[in-house]
Amino acid sequence: MPTERFQFPGSGGQLAAALDTPEGPIHAYALFAHCFTCGKDVLAAKRIAVALAAKNIAVLRFDFTGLGSSEGDFANSTFSSNVADLVRAADHLRKVHKAPALLIGHSLGGAAILAAAGQIPEATAVVTIGAPSDPTHVTGQFADSIDKIRKEGQAEVSLAGRPFTIKREFLDDVAEHSLMEHITKLHKALLVMHAPTDDTVGIDNATRIFVTARHPKSFVSLSGADHLLSDRRDAAYVADVISAWASRYLDARTADDKASEAPREVVVRETRNGKFQQMVSVGPHQLLADEPVAAGGDDTGLAPYDLLLAGLGACTSMTMRLYADRKALPLERTTVTLRHNKIHAEDCAECETKAGMLDQIERVITMEGALDAEQRKRLLEIADKCPVHRTLTSEVRILTSATD
Image (cartoon, rainbow, N blue to C red; front, top):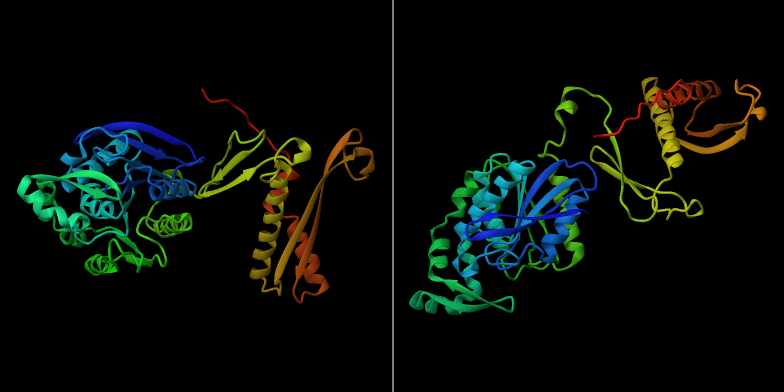
């Protein structure tokens, strides 16, 4: 998936960001907040973002102050500054693309997302993953150093095996935040995801968030997953669930789609993987097109004529189903098998063209069910009336132009 890398101004300097985008059309934008002391390229964040991009959701992830490639000193950052930077990230998306409709936060990033959500009006759905119900929970990771931080103003602590400086200002700031107040005023769909065996942020945190939130709200157990979702399968599962859940709350239709039931555009774009591979995007759906190995391709997807035959076969079966249901015919299942060939025109007695080569499509239809001979005959007649069949057998005008 394409990744756009850029910077935007944050509370402590320029923040490094990555926007993972789909190969095809973008249906919605999401903003991802990573865990405490993690960076935008932590495995969980990256894997979830790439997986959501594959489902047509562009995801912005960025390094908070002093982390990863971002400027500033981590020691000067606070929970409030992280929340403010999330709002700045949403502002940046709003200016250059579109404001995020989906907000996702992992661990302390989940708490920050909940606190920032009210300041991002376009967001309609919020997801927390292993999030604490109180930002002060994070101080448990350096509990032995809290007295020193209070007395000396700061102390160096070890987090995830790396040294970080924590200041007294950080402790004071997290203590002032009442996350429950933000949750009660969320007014957005909420999905709480948490592992029952999470030994970093206990499951009781998810319970408090879920109970405090108002509907619509959902809870999904990440059974067997660790706090950082270090197993690729867990990250993929999280992305799949988020995509399916969010589809109910993200309006991916364009204004034209809402105004009419006009056919959707089909966008075909080279992937540059191999000689012929293409990404075919139709609304929320994607599939690969390629040529067989014998034709110089890698056979990673349907060939152009495969797609043509698939369209005719699907249309044939759907048209027969509509007729059978309307007439209450006992048609249980239809199977359409198609083949495309080139034949000599002289071999087709009923064809108007008498010289050269012609395209011929063979269509064999299998009908399951207790149908009598007359019903089968009528269904075959209906098959020839499917819209794609009519298009292929009528005069077709194709207008080709190039963009500027």
